[in-house]
Length: 169
Image 1 (spheres, helix red, strand yellow):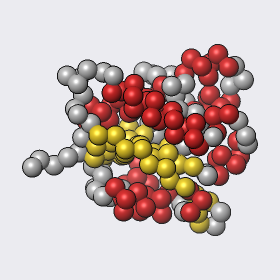
Image 2 (cartoon, rainbow, N blue to C red):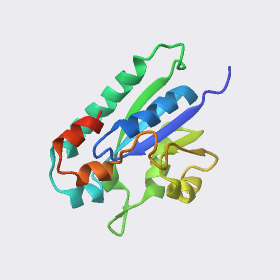
Image 3 (cartoon, rainbow, N blue to C red):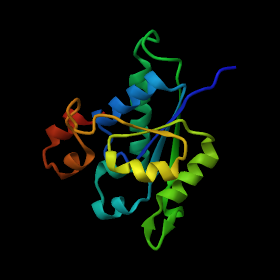
Image 4 (cartoon, rainbow, N blue to C red):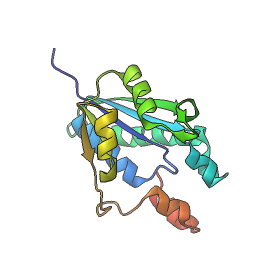
């Protein structure tokens, strides 16, 4: 039996957008099993305050929708990828009132097992990912946001509903 390539992509997805979708599509090309980890109850959520896309159930729904979009692509292009969506309650992994990525990563590794690839669009995550996911390759997708010129921060800071609609999944 050959080794199954396991990939993990975690985020708050505040909101989930087409840049996130492009990462999920890349994962479908490269991984046999994809774990999408939705981080909830984060300090970031408290800073944002209430907004309609903050709801954890909505973000969970969006991740399922993204997986459905990727699955619609003919199997000739993608592996027969298995997708698993996990919800991680960050309030359980805090240290001195701050989100503790190493504790969260240990929980994910305990739940998932060995992870071959960890995905993001942030080169600055490389040192923490090397420590949090030893042995996993950090795959950085479109860090300059040239292929898909959007970020969740940009969408949160926009007052334009048309911009949100254009870029959200």
